[in-house]
Length: 111
Ligand SMILES: Nc1nc2c(ncn2[C@@H]2O[C@H](COP(=O)(O)OP(=O)(O)OP(=O)(O)O)[C@@H](O)[C@H]2O)c(=O)[nH]1
Ligand SMILES: [Mg+2]
Image (cartoon, rainbow, N blue to C red):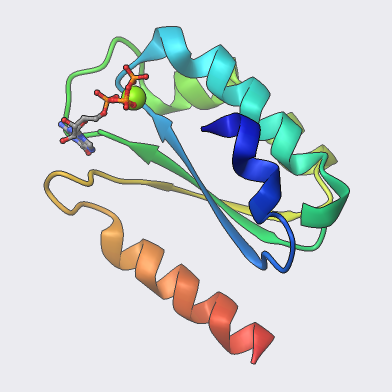
């Protein structure tokens, strides 16, 4: 789907980017996609929430290792956007309340 993402950039205020925390082999490709989004001029004012999903599954790496592998601190420091992260499981609902609160917060700021 990523080739058509840019057709949705216009008027986008909040961006939720889901990474599969249970699949280390996909992380670098996923990170490249994220960097592409963060460098898009049209998204420079968007608020970004990066979701590390599937945390209910066993993973080869800790969340700290994953964040360090994708150099999340550098990404956050260099991006124009305000970036927040959350660890979630769409399967058992962990972290989803945080996501809803974040969305509510963004809505408040933009209204
Ligand atoms: N255990 C678990 N499964 C999830 C979660 N979120 C989604 N899924 C399941 O993951 C599956 C879809 O994700 P993937 O298998 O990664 O599929 P995909 O991302 O379209 O394809 P890939 O490119 O192969 O990763 C579905 O079966 C979902 O039910 C979660 O938080 N935990
Ligand atoms: Mg997947």
